[in-house]
Length: 318
Ligand code: ZN
Image 1 (cartoon, protein in one colour):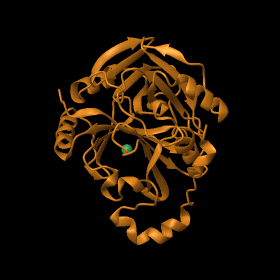
Image 2 (cartoon, rainbow, N blue to C red):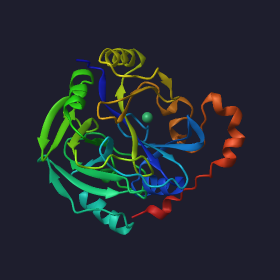
Image 3 (spheres, rainbow, N blue to C red):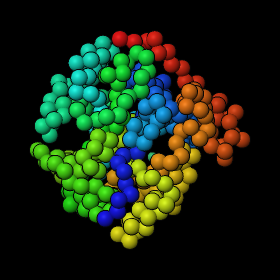
């Protein structure tokens, strides 16, 4: 048993349009754009990060907006739903906001006794849930136009759609510091100490089609670990269990390893001790294109292919 995973770090999604993405996540949902950078493996594509004021691990959603990318298909072998955490008092506010901004959503329903789930979709059809609960003590980003009491507090959890659960469950419990904490209607919940921001739900759906990558689908989910030392220990434990783990990669704001879990979903383990203020102060997070040192020499060429991001917050007031 390894005690080195502390919960979720971020979730990364494929999208089709940077401007629409910014309007939905910063505008309608009121998250903070905490970093504008590029996909380090394809630098002509943005990598946009949203989170709370500081973009702390467990609050982060990230997107690769490939212009015009065709929609993907949700299915087994994918993480299929991202749940975001809100206060138990915030459901009515978000229902009204979704109606006002024409966000596709469903009527709220109760799950696992204490949580109220408001399911919706983003502009690429990504399945999201706002989960109203009483346990989350984190504060959301006080953006000025989402009242602080109603602001999204960060990630709540992620749903994995799997052919079968046993090997994935064993990985989470034996190597990743997770416990099996609840079960309801074929949904098995795993968490680190029962805390919002750590939940991983496995839903077995052997009869569904396999998922296909495309816009509106989740590319990978990242778990958080404290630092390089704990990451190294997790990497060794995964190797001993037979997983093919990448070398440690420098992602500028964290260090990362990647591997495929037994159901073939891409998992990452990212360090928590660097963060988004490494290249700009907290007041300026997300306001300018930031490049890692190895791409600075290509800045002017990249700025010509990346469309400028414009965002007018006054469009998104209640
Ligand atoms: Zn990642």
